[in-house]
Image (cartoon, rainbow, N blue to C red; front, side, top):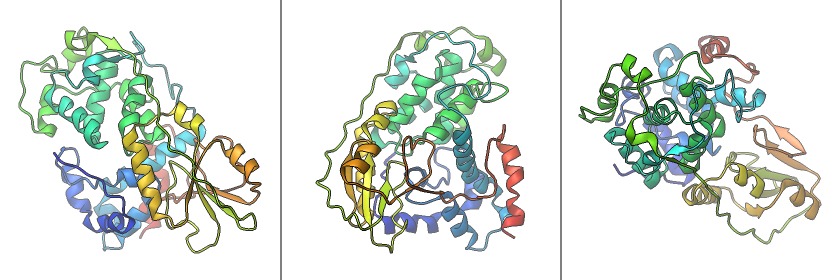
Length: 365
């Protein structure tokens, strides 16, 4: 499967016209289903969930007709709302149990688990920076519930490679799979994996009933574990040209919106903080993707260093930035992101309580 994510803004916006929300609802669980491939652009803040929703509704659809598609957009907002309140590096609801190691199965890292649908998905992740959502769940279940690894290191491994890496979605989803953010663990057997990944395997360690899988010993294929150590290769800073009489607009890994304050004069700076990428490392492919997307923002300059150092070095006192849970130490004028609903915030213990509170059928009549 060949997969490439273009970075030109006009091309990205044109992808909105290709969305088929009805086909999406019917086929989205299949690896070759009518998924949108927009998640890298949403995660990098190039487009927003609200922008996608309003574009689709502008084609004449009603919320009730495309509820499955709309829910997936709202899941993204929901995880961000959770991250505003909860420390996602800790258990959201209860500790994962049992945990036998804090590493990751070597066969997962090497895409050699013997489960063809999962191994193929991991190889695609390494090659393209993308993994289908169902395959993410399969992989997480294998790592946490079958191999009994603590969720955090495998989650960081996957985040490292994903072009659409979003720590809120990633951490919350891994915790949901392993039971730290849900009432029960998620399992997939071979029949389920075959159905949605177009494989036809049998006699694997997952070719069992769910009752057998939940109680079986760790398969030999997953017993060997190892650490996952990663670092980020950061680019060089530009020699900044700054006008202190103008406002400064701060962009980062989670905000590369070309339309943000588009018609205003100002200093536009892509802030790349080493401390952030030390805590949440990403691959060269992810860095290259970010740097390519920043070209959609005229006059933007790259600064590698701490927010506080940037502000002090260039004597910036009229700074604007978009809110994000991982913007640690930012000061200035914080602006809200483009939420589907600005009126529903705070922590909801389940997505469906959040979804019911949104009441989008009433908002978008």
